[in-house]
Length: 282
Image 1 (tube, rainbow, N blue to C red):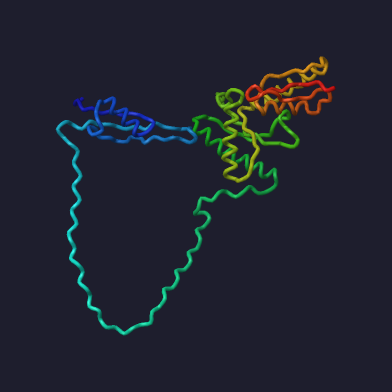
Image 2: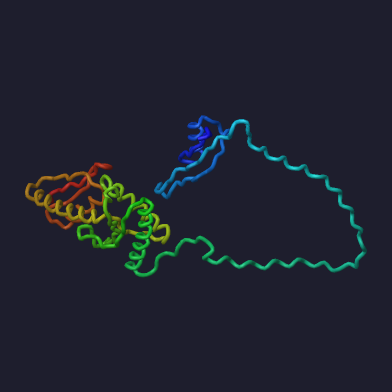
């Protein structure tokens, strides 16, 4: 070591990294040379963000930064001599021809949005699901997750005859963090993926995002719970309230009992405390 102060420092931005380095070296900005090792990145939707890295090197005492050379003063230019006007025969004045109209740029040269999906409703749903799978794989890669996405059909417990949807099922190991409390994380991933697909294809899409078949298994469990509790309500004649659930899970309870001749369903409560109640039919 020669006693020279230097080091690499990190920060959310280049300015923050420089400030951290100056504080650590106890120097001012004029006393160091700054080299940007990595400018940092905000990532995509906050995913894949990287800190900025800079290297600070103290300027040895007794030396100073070379001052920039002053710009040379402009020399006065001699005034141009007036040209002698030669007598020329007058010529008829011609009007300038209009410039030819330029051809419009080809569509490939502009960032035009993708055309709406064409084909039958089933073909449009399949194309939207494929686009969603492509974008979802990109999100998972930026999150550093080793996972794949398969396109499957909804389980019987989730299917509404008037609203069938395809499922983008994320498969892999240790993916529980993608579900979250009351499916909050999974619902957010689904919302963002749908939003990106809708923006690209200019068509509203209705695919579902799942993780290792979690939603399908949960839907079947809720369907069995609804049928079991409906039997108790029909026998006792008393209203029963289930635990608070997110909208997608309450929908499964309603679907399971919509044709039940003895028991009806109602959603009561507000926000996160909203729940389904089973009411005997008179």
